View: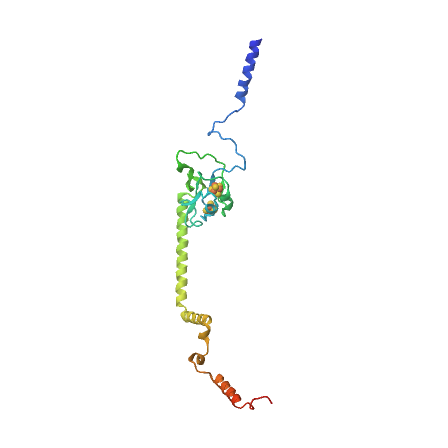
Length: 223
Ligand code: SF4
Ligand code: SF4
C-alpha cells in the first residue's frame, strides 16, 4: 500500500511535466511580445526621402545617414538612408515619431546579439524590410536621369530666351539707375546750383529783396 502511494506521488509531477510547457527552446521558440513592444527598427526604403530628421532628433546620436542602392532616387536624390547603432539605442521611438514619410517603424524582432561590435550597427541593408529590386532600381535611376536632363534643358532654354529679349539689358540698366537714385545720400540729390556753390535765381532774388528792406525800412515795413 505504501509503495503504491509513493509511486503515485512520483508519477503526477512527471505527468504534468509532459503536458505543461515549462520552458521554451530560445532562440528557436520566442515568447509572444506585447503590442506595445519596441523592437529593432524596420525601414521602408521605397518611401524614405533621406531627410535625416530621424538622425537629428535621436537623443543618443545613434543614427547616421549612409548610402544605399535600393531606395527610390526620385524621392531620395542623395540616396542616403539611416544606419542605427544598437549599442547606443534606448528604443525611445522618437525617430519613428519624427519621420515625415512614415517609413521607419519599431518592429517586433528583439534579437541583436553578435560577436563583434559592428554586428550591432545595422545599416539600411539590414533594417530595410521593403526595398526595390536591381531591375526596378535601374529603371528608377534612368527615370531620375531623364527628369534631371529635361530640367537642365528647360533652364538653358529659359536663360537663352531671357538673353534674346530686346531691351532686356536697357530695362535692367534703368532699374539699376532708379535704385541708385533712391538709395543715394541726401547731398547727392541736392540742386546743381547748390552743389556748384552758386545761389539759384530764386534764392538770389529773395536775398536782394531782404537787402532792400534792410536799407529802407519803410519799404515793405508795417503800414
Ligand atoms: S529609438 Fe531613440 S535612441 Fe534609438 S535610434 Fe530612435 S531616437 Fe535614437
Ligand atoms: S527614415 Fe524617415 S526621418 Fe529618417 S531619413 Fe528616411 S524619411 Fe527621413
